[in-house]
Amino acid sequence: MVLPQESESLAREALPQEVYDPRAEIRRHELAAFLRSRRERISPEQVGLERGRRRRTPGLRREEVAHLSAVGVTWYTWLEQARDIQVSAQVLDAVARTLLLDTSERTHLFNLAAAVDPAPRTPCPSITPALRTMLEQLEPIPACIQNSRYDILAYNRTYGRLLCDLDSVPPEDRNCMLMIFTNEQWRSSIVLLEETARLMAAKFRASMAQHLAEPAWKVLLKRLQTASPEFREVWQRHEVVDNRGKRKQFRNAHVGLLTLDHTDLWLGPSTGPRMVTYVPADEESRRGLEKLHELTLQGAPS
Image 1 (cartoon, rainbow, N blue to C red):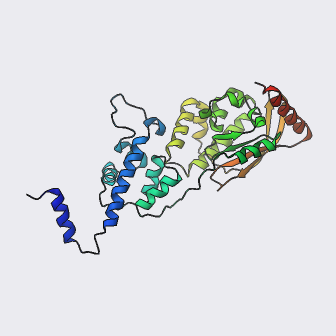
Image 2: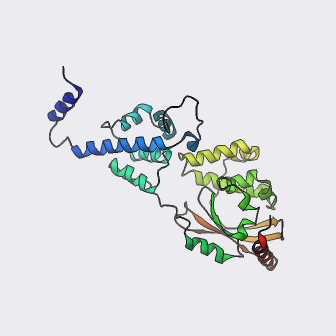
Image 3: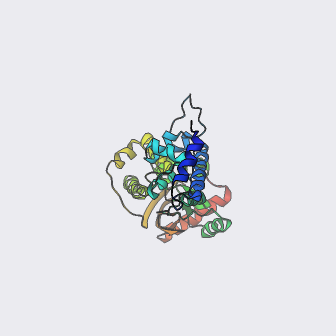
């Protein structure tokens, strides 16, 4: 009887020397171990799945990764078993997005697979002290830093009181899409609410086209569809529009009507993070922002 180890050894000996590459085998095993470790650290909730009572597998199951990545379960299983199979860069991209790999992990994945990344990511800059200082120095101009998913990553005091008491909102809910469709204080501050909400949904759809396989985007979309019938109705229109500056009007609870010019200052590629600013469009709005800033310094109005 030939043992599996002996059979594998005989098969290797039968191959021409130029075909068998021990380095490729090492990479496959490293790739398999790396994928297992990344899969086991992702909770079902992080990718929009429910945690079943009988779940024993740490992190995600193989079939869940395969489903979220739109690849075959058998194929993905072979990948984690270090089988000698062909893997495309597009499939690696989908798996990387499903496993929420950061820039370094994504680069490592493609290196192990000996593949060229079709869409190398520019890392979102961390909110450095320099960026926070810049936000503060812009006051009384309201300013914040957002990513392409409209998460509010940082903001100055004036922006924090422009549309609502942003400090009172849980960090995980500080997202412009969620706020405009679910936060009543935020919604009441927007003069042209219906038009603005429709425009935001169109921008979100255009941005999401480059992130369709990413769990974080799918989780946000599911939250919006579950929480807001208005969003569901607007989303069905399939409208798209690119990001552009626009004059906006807000009805602030403390200083009244403000007419502001919205501008995006990109911190990376146009699909990445940006600094959002609101410059007063007239003298009355300039005085209003100065007053709002003074109120924040006096004790942050609620």
